[in-house]
Length: 224
Image (cartoon, rainbow, N blue to C red; front, side, top):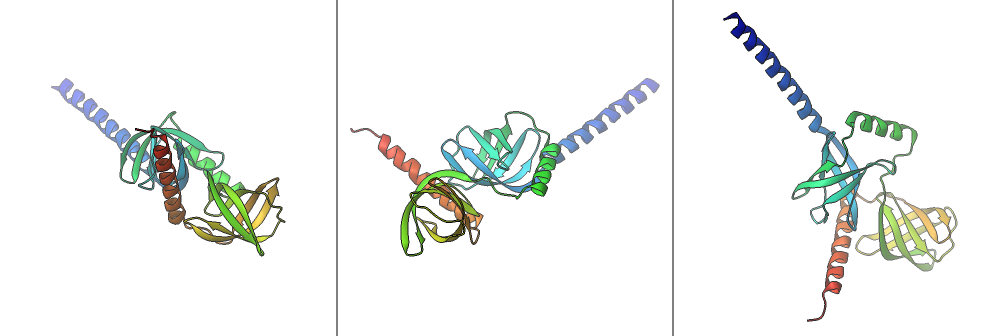
């Protein structure tokens, strides 16, 4: 009888420990971040909101039109990027599993240190899109190299001066005013006077890639 009681106590102890571990892991899995990250998958790039993250994976909210391959890169800063496999998708939510286990606490701590000593900047999305810009009375043809809600890098055959004010005319996104921050050869870095809202620029990117993929698909269809 005593042995049965002791066995029951041991079993109850292990059961309690198991519940504690499972509860801790559950909390780790549901660690809410709500951080914006750059998502790159196949030929498409865009931004998504990290809803929760764990050592093995992450759940991200993305634009419903964002097409994804089997794998994706989640860039939290220009220096911190994680590779993940797509495990499931439901409307705007995507579940991803990391290629390698990560230490979430160390990751978040490193991001806090990065934000403390560096100017926080959302990783820019690389793309190629023909645009024009107005500088004074001159209209100049250019091409987008990369873009974020706060700035853009373009390629143009035009010499600018640091501090020049200009207006970018971006198809489907509208006119955006900005200031030239730097120029190196034909590449020009511009800071927007007003940040473009994340939903607006995300919708624009999604439509851009959708049109490009549709165009590529139509061109790949051979004659009957």
